Length: 294
Image (cartoon, rainbow, N blue to C red; front, top):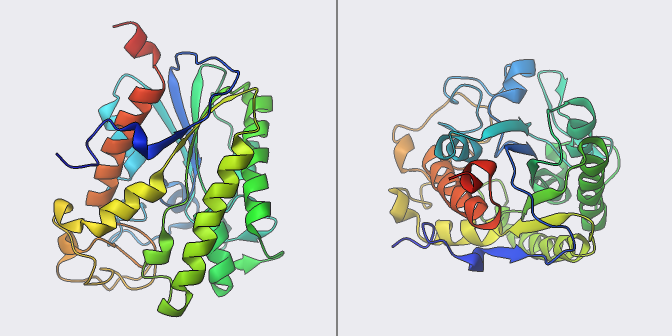
């Protein structure tokens, strides 16, 4: 059996906090391009589609759309924006004059029907850390540090708690983008150290939030194993991205063999597998109202 299909708690860090778990009826995600289901495209017509699939930053649905497919009786609300950082006043991306909102701005400006019965997913940090490695790829007002980024995630959780009375959170770790084509070989060791230390720092700060229930999904480990064994998806990592860079219209002739769709994002097959893994994890960690009524 593939390690990504196992209901294994080895891929999640659990925080034993004082808040009790309440069955949820909605999943609400605040995130970046790994989750974006066309939000950027709605405002910017980026990325170009085709060759990108219906405004996704991949060649098919994203992982959260797979979660929604696997959980048809649960409302899934997607507030992922491609290029999102934790706070766009520090660093932001811009596509066709659309300034991408950060996590704090997504929460403040893109209202959702959330409440204490919602499960909030936070999947952010990749662009923040990448801006430290590749600052030329972003609009930098104030350079970020891992302390600022992790503090912004904490602020986001507190803002959700205040605005929506949110009590249940699943926070995804930063994936190992040091293995992505976007990071030059000379920067890979630096990126690896930054990502690892950031995830550890974030965990330590989340552990101190005792009035909410927080569980941290180890996306980093999941991707490490996926990249080490791409054959399970019928993919390869030694052939580079199918689309060079990001937003280009030049496409390889064999897109279904590339682990990386472009230099920043994985193939839709990877999204599907990540979504299947995430669904099992969510069902294991948090009961939904639909589950409790069965």
